[in-house]
Amino acid sequence: MKPGDCPQQDSPLFETQAAMPRAVEEYLKPEVVRQIARLDLRAQFIVRGFLQGLHASPYQGFSVEFSEHRRYASGDDPKDIDWLVYAKTDKHYVKKFEAETNITGYLVVDASASMAYTYRQELTKLDYSISLAAALCWLMVHQQDPCGLMVFDEKVRTSLPARSRRSQIPQVLSVLSKVAPSGKTDIAGSLVQVAAMLRHRSLVMVFSDLLADPPPIRDALLRLRHGGHDVILFHVLDEGEVRFPFEGMVELTEPETRDRLVIDADAARSGYLKAVETFREEYRAWCFRAGVDYVPLDTSMQFDRALMEYLHNRRARF
Image (cartoon, rainbow, N blue to C red; front, side, top):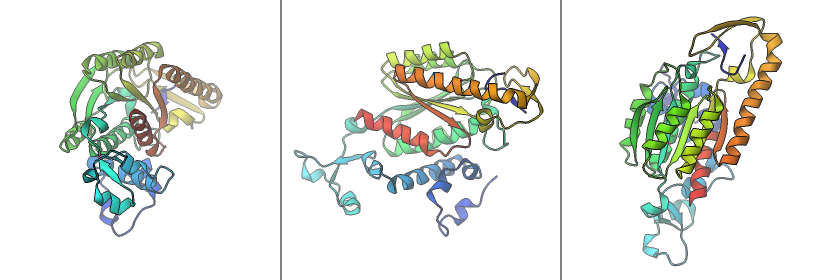
């Protein structure tokens, strides 16, 4: 048994949003976000909660630092000071030139059949990944960062070139909203294809459950790194795959081959949980050595961790 083998509306949120402010955490909980059917509203909802959380945290400066502004420094032309920002922050900021601020990002989403799994019948791994990708797109474009998209299973099926204009958001979200999980996966081959398609240094953000042979995937990630690209690997598992909450005799279904196996869940639990822990730890250790940012996620986790990882990566570049 291995990780990934698992048993088989619109919301009034935005109608009451102005009248009843929500705690920051509410914006970031998957069980709340899933009630929002429209992907554009879902993305804005996640980012709003994230930015509110930054404002109330030690990272308060991020919301300005990661916009199109930077702190005024000796030698800057005072005419470039943004007085609207000064009025809000009581600090002097100047508008960044395009070359100072741009980071080209590509959202690379695994849409193979295994990403359709959900233990609670709420957000699937693909739903969770798409929600995160949509929020990252919204955040990037509002930072004036070009954002592109690639969706793959056995190969890259859909791609959009990176652009920073506001119209890019509905284009990316339109594609994401139509993605349906299907077919087998070739993560390694698809990432090699991604590397061949990129013409300029980029930040490549991969969303996948990584349920395939690790060595070829690692080789493909190294190819991206050797090409000068930064990589964030969002390892998205279902909460059921991480916690194994099953009891008694259960039937497991391999999501892509549809092979079935009946096991005693109680007898298998300890070995399964150890295998998942080892699976993640080996990826974490390898990614650290390779200079890949590894972010283990499951579908019960709030969305802020992934958004913060993007901001940390962006900050390290400038």
